[in-house]
Image 1 (tube, helix red, strand yellow):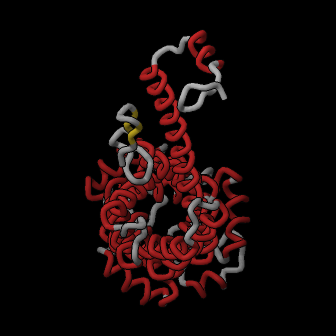
Image 2 (cartoon, one colour; image 1 turned 180 degrees about the horizontal axis):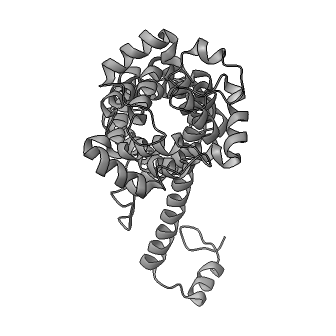
Image 3 (cartoon, helix red, strand yellow; image 1 turned 180 degrees about the vertical axis):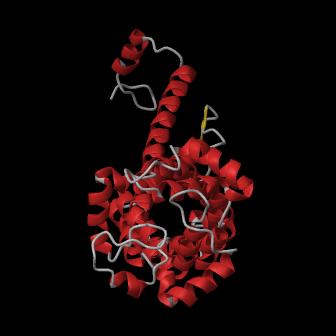
Length: 363
C-alpha cells in the first residue's frame, strides 16, 4: 500500500496492507512463539511424558507405589497433578524447563514462518474488508502450518529426545542440541531426523486450520477496529482448545515415533509407522490411550495459544506504531525541505500587514 503526500513522501513498497515489513511480520510471529513456549513449558513437559508412556491408563492408575517404573525402567506417571510432584522430586525445578532452549530455537522460526505465511495468504484471499471466511481461514492456517512444520521438524524431534532423558539418573544420552543432532544423524541417518514427520503434517492440518478458523471467526464477530490484548488471549485459547480435540491423537503418535530409538533412555523401537502406531496403541492401551496427557495438553494449549496470539497482535501493533512515527518524521522532513528556510522578518511583516477589503481599503 502506497501513501503519498504531494509526491514527496512515499511509504516503502515492502509495507503491505498489514502495515508491516516482511521482517517485522516474521519477527512478530517468532517472538510470540518463544514467549508462549517459555511460559507454558512445565505443562508441555508433563504432556510429553504422558504421551510417550506406553503403560495402559488403568494400569498406570493402579501403580500406587511411588517410583513405579515400566519395562524400560522409566517412571510411571499416574496422574496429572502427581506428575508435577514426581518431576520436582526427581529432577528439581529445572526439570520443568528441559528442552525449552531447543523448543524456543524451534518455535521462533516455526511461529515466524506460520504467522508470516498466514498473513501473506490472507492478503491474497481476504475480502475487501480484509476478512476471511471460515473455509479460507482453514486453507490459510493449514497451509501455514504445513510449511512451518516441515521447515523446523528436526528441532522438534530433538526437543522431544532431550525432554525424555532423565536428569541425575544416569549418564546423559545427549549433551545438548548439537550433540543430539550429531548422534541421531550418525546412528539413525537423515530419516531419523524426520521420524513422525508424515504424522505431524497430517495432524497440523486440523490443528492449525481449526485454530486460525475459530480465531478469525471470533475476531470477525467482535468486529473491533483495534485489538484488545485480553480478547486476543481469549480468542487464541478458544481456537486452540477447539482444534486440539481433533488433532491430539496425531500429536501423541508423532511423539511416540520421535521418541523410539536404540539410544539409552529412549523408547524401544516398536512402531513401524503412523498406522502401525495407531493400531498398537488402541490394541494394547485402548482407545483412550490416544488421549494420554490430554488434561495437561488442554491446560497447556489454551494459555499457550492465548499468549501466542496476544503477543503476535500486540507486537504487530507496536511495529505499526513505530512505522507511523517514522512516516510522520519523513513527512515533516520532506515538507521542510520543499518549503525551504523561512525568513523570520518576512514572516513577521506578512503577519503584521493590516487586513483590507476588495478595494484595498483598510478594514
